[in-house]
Image (cartoon, rainbow, N blue to C red; front, side, top):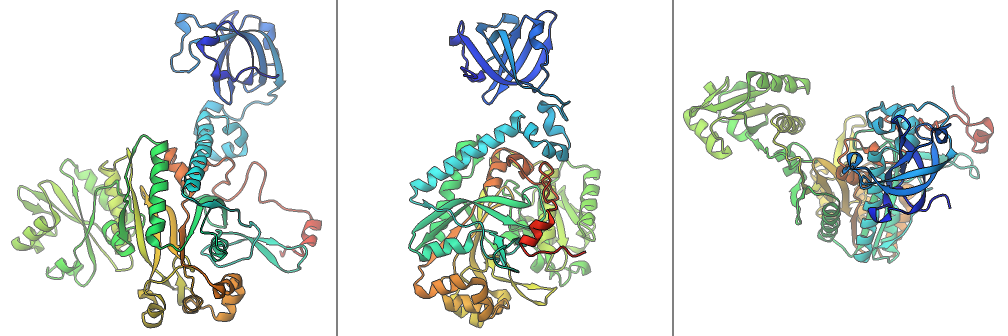
Length: 576
């Protein structure tokens, strides 16, 4: 046996036992004739005491060793109550090197999170020894296990879907895999198991789920890993939107309650339509920890003789700025111009009247209307955002977020969930000058075929919904389009005729001719769930071996060049 115990599993009840421990040397401390080693293994740290200096020959930090000795109580002055094993130590009389550490470490393991990320990822196997990163990966495993148990208890069946599949337009670039057997043809890695899970519903499986890998050639963000990510993919037959949202509420609430001590908003989660969310929060990913709400003042200013706000949409945000300095307001203007605004007007209620440059354009009655309708109190400031209809809500949302952070009014000790529903089904593409799907192309339009036949495409909404937590989109989903006629017309509006529809989605289109049940589903992102629960700012700190922000694996060297023979096998020639 290379060990009799895990290091951190030894307890005071083991005092007097002869043990063998194996692990990494986390630190070495020479106290003049007595040397202390912190031995780290998967379970934690144990202090090892060595009285023979000769035992340390060839031993450096991160050397893998095995020690033999007796468990003893620590001297009173050396007790470390911060460690689970801080009351005991192992006095070793024998040490064996199992894996020497021959090179100088590129960074201190305990300080790896303060190291440049490119270096951390190049030596990720060292970075993973850091207790915080290791803890994140263990947390991830526990969360996935917990979710699997919940889904099984809700009668969902776990089914694996293919990784090599056909390319399909689903909102991002595909990763393509050339075929050796079929010259000039390609597989694609799935952006999501979308068609497969709908085909499972047609196949008669009532409730499907899997922890699904998804592959999209997208640029990285703090909450998005380039290349590969995982989601809790689930689909339900004979289900409507409410059925899916109920499952999502239960699973997400129970998961967050299990793995955090922060406050978690209980079901039912608050719900907003897409239009309502954009108007009130300036985003379809609202952070409800921020109490500020955006008001629509367009109608109000249509009766105010202020030229800059005439015939334009106007938004207002009320915030308590009673203790704010002049520098704060200068910073607010600097932020506004930095995001493309021409300025940021505001008025402050002080001594019963408004102060500010816009105040002179308001009558006493209009001032009172603002105070009563917006609930403005003494010391509050009303900020104004006015711009083109296409951008005014997004700008107001950015100002809202800035105010929330700058005024430190965001509830950092909470997870606030909400659903955003009824997304526009289509959007105008200024590049192609055509109509594109905004969300999932397989969604059911609200109003069905009648809406597709009678409405302007930009006025059609879909049974699509997102789960949002603390301003981060955790999941998207939809009631699926299971009707061949509706599917045909929906894709026709987006520029796909029936021939192309059959070529791109032939299996699904054909399957719907053989009796397809109404079905719906969604797919919460596992990586983002873990990132939130681990309280990390970047998703890469909760993934064992992530790509960097430039979609590279700097540890293994991917993407890399391959031999000419490999290219010939798959009928590919690199063009200069």
